[in-house]
Length: 470
Image 1 (cartoon, rainbow, N blue to C red):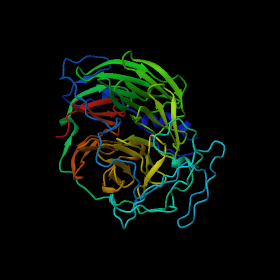
Image 2 (image 1 turned 45 degrees about the vertical axis):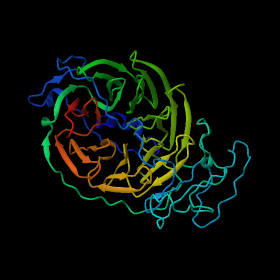
Image 3 (image 1 turned 90 degrees about the horizontal axis):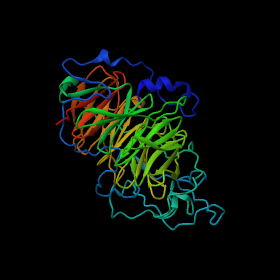
Image 4 (image 1 turned 180 degrees about the vertical axis):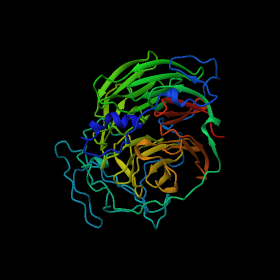
């Protein structure tokens, strides 16, 4: 989310129960920030620089390829605790018996015999041969609650009554990051391939062979990556509505925030809006991931997650979360959410709508991107989480700046945007800080697609096409 957006939405944000961190600022005209020796492509103008046919790099807004063990098992240890979900009852206390569920009550789901597997620290993270804990488990959903729904349950359901403000897990120590230094630093001019003059560009998405750029003023620009040409500009917001960020695409499915908490579906074949839903979208969510046949949107104060069917353009899944969250992404088998107030990462089963695992110790967790691992930006830096065990396997001292920064991960690299540094690039395996791309421009979104690294700069009124870091 850009600083410009925060300035325009401040009056509305102040009335929301959950305080949102928004940094005020002002944009500079793109003409004041043209880089020396670099051609600037004006909106809807063509460039003779034809490129090869696009090869799409998997972005974080699409389901990632499966990694070993990305299943629904819960994980424990110092940073992972299973959550109750949907019972509406007080949080069970460790060591105390769970209250007997009322099975067969009006509107109550059928009882289930499923008992969540909980791994204790003595068993070791990821030990599939470890015995499952039996008997009542603190934090496990009571039998007969929505949390015990078996896989295959229809995704259309009545939301649970779990209070978003309820305690969700015992406090755990903050994950301490390793301090890292860059292997090299170079100016942004050495990476730039092209610059597009676009007013207040914000979120990015790759879909239908095009790059899509959501502006803060509600316009959605479509760019042909083979010609570097803006081929369409689509108005997506209703006049008078509060502007909002939010964009996601996969194949021919494209969803964008349409202002005032609404989301709109755009048909790439006609570049027109074909559906509009008022879901009360949470203002903080920038990326709208599309997976499991749905677009996933946080609503209200971020304490509810809804899935919008790509077939019907209607909400078919509604999950009450145990705390307020800000962003979501998807892996092969789960939806993941980051929740800054409680410092948690939630793993949600998209079929049953059950929160199966929590990872704690990440205060200010606000940014997330999923590739072969789950990457989370939090107050102390960036943490890496194993998708199969939910174990934090590493953390470094560089990370995005709250609501104004961004995070984008691929299988090999992690791209971090901050107010002070244009781009920082991590090695996803070694966690080495490979490169810092320096510029006095502020934060924005980043996406690796069509053989290039794309980065927005709302302050500059520019979209940068960069040479990938080798």
